[in-house]
Length: 210
Image (cartoon, rainbow, N blue to C red; front, top):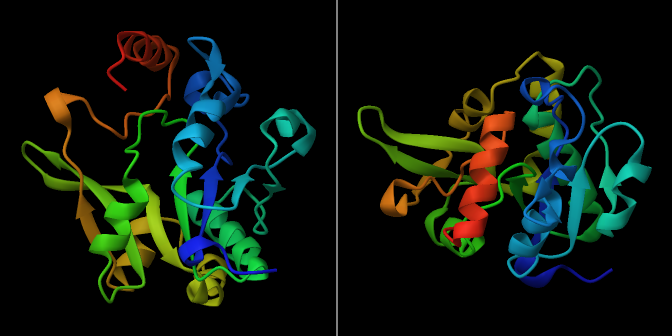
C-alpha cells in the first residue's frame, strides 16, 4: 500500500472506560443530532488519512463509523499510551511515518491541529498539544499528539515495564509542546467526561462556538 499523505495517519482514541459518564461509549452519545464520534471524524478527516478508531470490546458497535477498529494489544486498560501503541502498529503496516491522535470525546479540537503540530515538532519525535493555564503555564493535552511510528517498540517496552502516564514517557523522548489558544476562554480541547459536560457541549454546538 502507498504511504499516506505526508506520512500521517489518524487515530481516534476511544479505549477508555467512561466511568464518570456511567460506563458505555461516550463517543456514541448524541451531540445535537450527530454522535460525538461523527463530529470528531469530520474534524480529523481533512487533516490526516487514513483514519482508524482505537477501541476495545465488540467492534460491531462502531460499524456505522466506517473506520477500522483497532484494539489495545496490552491487556488491562492501561490508558491512552496503549491506544497510541495500537495506532502505531496499525499505521506501520500502512507505511505511515507518523500518527496523529485525538480523543473521541473532544468534539471541538482545532481544525488546524495537524498543521500546527507538524509545524512545531521540529527535530523531536513527538509533539503534544498544549493550552495556556492562568497559574500553571502550558497544560499539555496528552491524547492530542503527533507521534513517530518508529517509537513503537520503545513504547511497547515502556508499557511492559509499567509506564502508564503519557507525559512520563514523552518527556523521556524530548517531546515538543505546541501551544494552542483558547479563544474567548473556550478550551478547544474541552472533553465530555460527565453528563454536565455533555449538556455544555450540546449548548456550545448549538451556539456555533465550536
